[in-house]
Length: 153
Image (cartoon, rainbow, N blue to C red):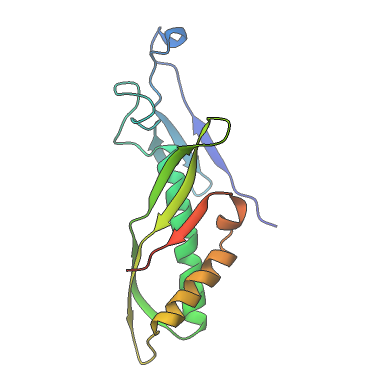
């Protein structure tokens, strides 16, 4: 099977680490070479110790679910002869507390908006089936316990 790598780097920049007054800014470097500025979410750690301009782990988690669903959907649609010109998803994740009181991303709702062209256009039942199959076959969806809901536009 495949192996995937990410390198996470953080460096202390203040003397107040033990007081909890330190920057959560760090970087994610992926095997292809791209480096992404990251931080904790400002809803978890207040500014200036987090940076709202950087990607936080919760956003990345939601983006990975949406991206995996989209890529699987595009693959399945192409195999069935549906030409897609545009796919946009404004996905939303919800943080809740589990039975032990620990926060977790309990639900992610995908809102895909898809533009088709060509001679063969899907009817709503086709699109619903494609989303169902994409969810069943998405590697990320099969790796998590978070509820994933698709509300196609």
